[in-house]
Image (cartoon, rainbow, N blue to C red; front, side):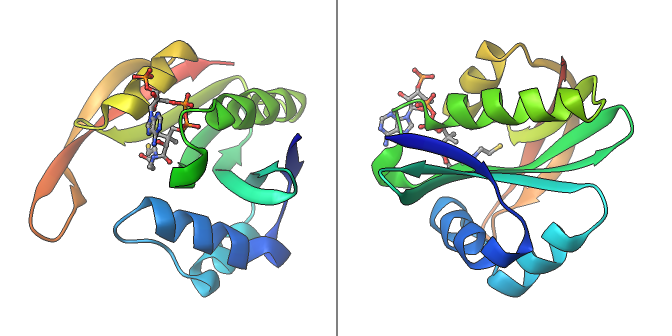
Length: 147
Ligand SMILES: CC(C)(COP(=O)(O)OP(=O)(O)OC[C@H]1O[C@@H](n2cnc3c(N)ncnc32)[C@H](O)[C@@H]1OP(=O)(O)O)[C@@H](O)C(=O)NCCC(=O)NCCS
C-alpha cells in the first residue's frame, strides 16, 4: 500500500538517507533538518508498505515554489512513486496559493527530464556548470510549470 505524507524536520534522518542513496553528494541529517526548518520549506515522503521509498522537497514563497530535491530509492524506481509525490504535493501547494513551479535538472538526467515533461514542465533556461560532480561539471536545465 502506498501513502504520501507531509513530513517536516523530525523526519530529517529519513530525508537524508533517501537523498544520500540518490545523489553522489547527499545531504546529511543536520543539513536536512536546517533546510526543513527554513521558512517556506515543504516536504513529503512516499511510503510503500510503511517503508520510506521517496522524497520531494520544496522552497516556496507566495505564488511560486522550487523543487529542491526529488529522489526515489533505487529498489522502488520505475513504479511511478515520483508521480504520486508530485501529484500529492502539487495539490497541497495549490491550496497554499502557489501557481508556478521551477526546478533545475542535470542535462544528462533523461529519466528525470522525461518525468518532468510528463508533468507539464518545459525548459525555460540553462545554467552552465551548475552541478559539480567532483570529476566533472554539468549544465542544468531550468524547467517551469504552471500549477
Ligand atoms: C528520477 C527519479 C526521481 C524517478 O523516480 P521514479 O519513481 O522511478 O519515476 P518513474 O517510475 O516515473 O520512472 C521515471 C523513469 O525512470 C526510469 N527508471 C529509472 N530508474 C529505474 C529503475 N531502477 N527501474 C526501472 N525504471 C527506472 C523509468 O523507466 C522511467 O523512464 P522513462 O520515463 O524513460 O520511461 C529516480 O530515478 C531517482 O531518484 N533518481 C536519482 C535522483 C534524481 O535524479 N532526481 C531528480 C533530480 S532533478
